[in-house]
Each structure stands twice: as structure tokens, then as C-alpha cells.
Image (cartoon, rainbow, N blue to C red; front, side, top):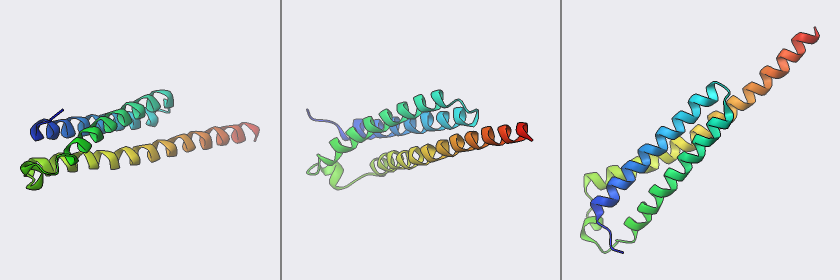
Length: 116
């Protein structure tokens, strides 16, 4: 199946944006210690990133294409958007793990205070 570069670039931006939206939504839930919801949104973010990566791979397969061999600003922006989303997704995962750790510490502290 032949793809159009413009279509692939739009998909990179679309899936990158969805990745970021879901990652930040996951953080929002984690701040409230609603980790089941946070994990659901992390999974959605990961799925969106994977979809974007599929389009990135399709772009790479167009090496002989004039549009890819001489990339436009829009193509570079689309690729950057997806890679930034990947970095933010990884950071969101680490932030959520810190919130989980914080909740465990708060639970321990509450138990200790009740014993005193």
C-alpha cells in the first residue's frame, strides 16, 4: 500500500497529540491516587504512540521518495511531535510511579501516627 507523505505527517501529529493527552490525563488521575484510571490512560497513551510509530515506520520505508529525501518543515515537525510525545509518555510513567510510592509512604505514616 502506497502512502502519501502528507497523510503520514498528519498521522504522526495526531497520534503524538493523543499520546500526550492520555499521558497527562494519567498523571491527573495519579495525583488523586486513582491508579486504575491512571493505568488505563497510560495504556491508551502507549497504544496511541504505537499507532504513530507505525506511521513513522511507513515514512522511513519511503526513503526513495523525493518528499522524504528532502524533508519539509511539516515532516520534521511531525516526527519531532511524535518523539516528544514518546519522551513525555516515559516521563509520565515515572511520575505515576512516584505518586504510587508517595501513597504507600503516606499509608505507612498514617499507621505509625495511629500507633503513637
